[in-house]
Amino acid sequence: MQQEHIQTEVADFIRKNFIFSDTKKLNNDESLLGSGVVDSTGILELIAFLEGKFQVKFADSDLVAENFDSVNKIVSFVSRKTTGAAA
Image 1: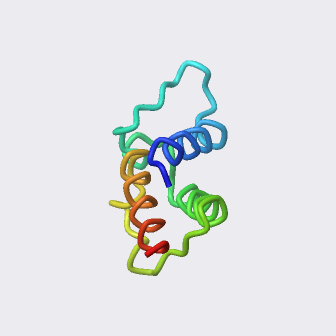
Image 2: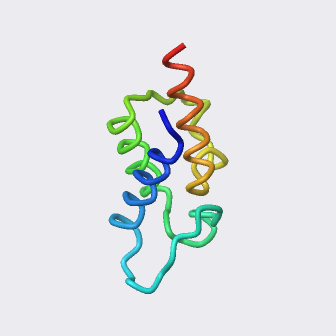
């Protein structure tokens, strides 16, 4: 799956579900947790979205902040998971 497609889908989901200001920009390298865009409950929502949208399953060991802390980290992680699933 192309990373650009994943990035668009993830960024759109975050904008629609977590950013409630028209003036707030989403930087793909910005820490979603550190900036307060997403909290621990939001991470669970994000995981459910990713599993449904990209047909991936996450192991307990995958559920660490480093994999979900920015749009780019999420894209990289989902890309690895979808590539691994196709292999």
